[in-house]
Structures are given as structure tokens and as C-alpha cells.
Figure 1: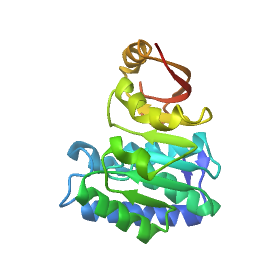
Figure 2: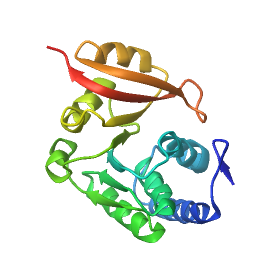
Figure 3: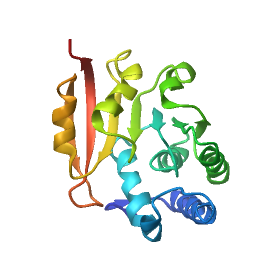
Length: 205
């Protein structure tokens, strides 16, 4: 099987299929994603989320902010399971969604743990990371404020942030408060969407 044109091992496919089955079961009672997108789970959510790991496909410590229905955090954790190394800290304050995420990790063997806390408090529980991910969470200035706890402490932390068609305006707005290095990756899944790879975050005086 291929995701985004990249070959995925049979072991990982089995884990992803188990996650998809679990997601569909829980989504009947919990609003894990927008109802209009549930029917296109594999392309709209799983393949879209897989792009994050495919941009940094090595063992690493990840912080996934606002993990919600598991995108991209659970998908990253599943890919890390194949490597047998790395970890995803999934931050989700909604207790029902946090329960779903714990179950998903347990049943897929994904490498991660769930932190049922507000993002603003996450730095106390998670002292360091290599990468940060977020999808459909907040505008870029707000995301950079969330990421700043880790990115200002260590200069080599990289954020991978999914953004839609209005991303250019968000980047311009963020530039009024922050300096950063930016690489724009065109989405292989959704037209007009990008993944913003951000590093070297610095607060403007």
C-alpha cells in the first residue's frame, strides 16, 4: 500500500486499519472530526496526517497539540512503532477524546502517551521535544505562542503545522510578532493546503 506516493509496510497498514476501525466506532458517539469529513477518513485524515511523519521520518520526540481525533499524533505514533523508537506526547484537554486517544495507542501499539491537560500547561509535563505538530487547531500566531515554550528553549526544535488556503495571511500576521525560518510544503492530499515547517523561532522585541 502507498500513502502519498510512499510505500507503507504491511505491519503499519494493519495498525492504520485497526485505528480506522476504532475511529469509526468511537466517532458514532464522540465528535472526533467534522461530520462532513468522516466519510473520507483515509484520504482526508489518515493520508493527510501521514504527510507530517513523511517529512521527518526518523525516530524523534514529538509534541502533538490538540490531538483531538488522533490527527496527526496517532498516525505519527503508528509510524514510530515500526521504527521501534521515538515518542509522541499527545496533548488533549477534552477527557472523552483523551480516552479515545489512550485506547487508540493501546490497540494499535503506537508509541505515545496522552496528556489530558490544556496546551498552556503542557510545558510543565513535557520538558523537551524535537518536533511539534498541530492540525486544524488555531491560527499561526496562536500556534507559535503555544510552540514557543519548546522552541525558545532549544534552537533545534521544528514545528510542522497544517494550514489551509489562507495560510499566507496567517504567516504575514505571525511575522509581526515572531521571526522564524519557514519552508512551505504543498499538500499531496488537499489542494491549496500546505504544511508549514518552522524553525529558528525568535520573539520580536
